[in-house]
Each structure stands twice: as C-alpha cells, then as structure tokens.
Length: 270
Image 1 (cartoon, helix red, strand yellow):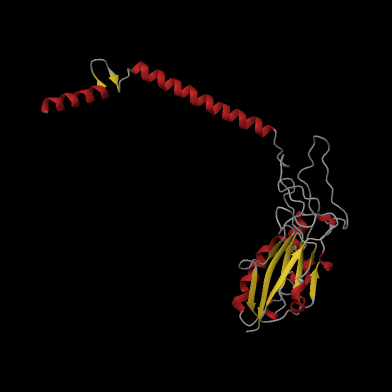
Image 2 (tube, one colour):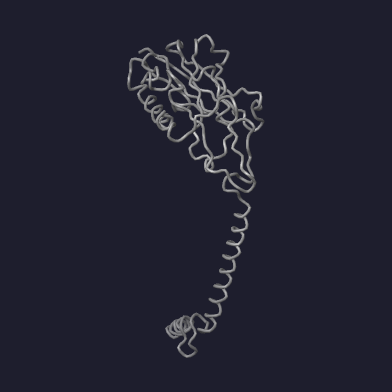
C-alpha cells in the first residue's frame, strides 16, 4: 500500500510539473503559449465585434430625439405635494401634520421663482405654440423656453400665503400636465368651491411643444394649482384630476390611469 501511495503521489507531481519533459499540467511552454495566444485573439475579436456593433448603433441615434419611442397619446398626470400613497391628510390645528407638505411645495416651486425665470427663460407671446424648427441639418439648439413664473399661481404660489392655505383648511394642490381638474361626481358635495391658478385651470399653448431635456435645458413644466376653498372637514374626499383636450385621446387601452390622477384628501379640524 505504501509503494502504491508513493507511486500515485509521484504521478500527480509529474502531472503538475514534469522536470524531465518540462511540462506543466501536461503541456509544454510552447503549447501553453499557443493556447493563450488563441484565446487572446479570440476575445480581442469578440471585443472588437461588440465595439463595432455599438459604434454602428450609435451612428443611428439622435442626441436630441429618440429613434424609437413608445409614447402614449395621453400624458401622465402628477400632483404636488407628495402624500403617502396619494393621500393628503392633515389637521389644521396640528402644524407638524402639514409642515412637510409646505416644505415639499417650497422645494418643488423653487425653480419657478420669478427672478430665476426672468434670467433663464423668455417672455413668450401667449395662446400660440412656441415653434423652434431646425434648419435642415443645422440644429436650432439649445432651444429657448417660456417663463412660468411662480407668482402666476397667485394664492397657491407660496408668496402671498407662505402656508399654501394648509393652516386655514384651504389646501393648494399642484397639478402637472393637466388641463382641468374635475372632482369625482360622488364627492361633489364634500369638495365645495374650487379656485384655479392660472385661471380656468388651463395650460397655455406657449409651453408646447416640448423638445426634450437636452435640447431645452431650461424648460420649466407648466402647472395648474387647485385651491379647495371650503372642503368638508373630518371626512375622506376622493378627487380625480384628468386631462381634457380636443387634441388628446381619452384614456389608454394599455394604461387606464393615463391622463388622470386620483388622490384622497382629508382635512381634520383637530
């Protein structure tokens, strides 16, 4: 048994390194060199093919406009301030319950400050599209954007009322990409009168078309503010805001929430 163990151990040592044939793991230095050379050329070829494929693909892309896009015919709608799962609940007598909403609105509206808008964006002619076409192969970039001043939101700007009405039980909700805010029929008796800023809850045509973040670096998305003037207290109010326009499709077969947003509002007096 000992002789067999020594023989087996010797065979393993010779396989790892054979001093007589100068073979490492059964191959000579020349054999290992050829194998390494083969894999080096092979992987260099694969890397070259990948780089060439990426280069050709990048040649087909436009830096300012996607070649392919799956765009819904109806834009999405979002609200500010951000509540917990689209629920805005607070108590007028508890400052801490609505202080976070005020801070969220202040942060969100900071790019809309009038002083910043005057410096970066144009005072456009209202009620018409702000068209900025390219001239053949010559890019008209960067494209200019129209001012949307914070003060246009009036009572919901945080300038006239720094608490956005939350301390009085008359909260402001900001709507993005919305033409008009319409409450659910079932809760009309709870919502009470509403005030819209800008008037009529509309977006002016001068903020469109949007040419993309890279082409329109200073674009400021227009907003609509809705102020609840006399909403019912101590009860859940379901509100739905949706896009209405003669140029946009109503809803989407792929996304039933396209073009609308629903949220719950609850104002407690204690």
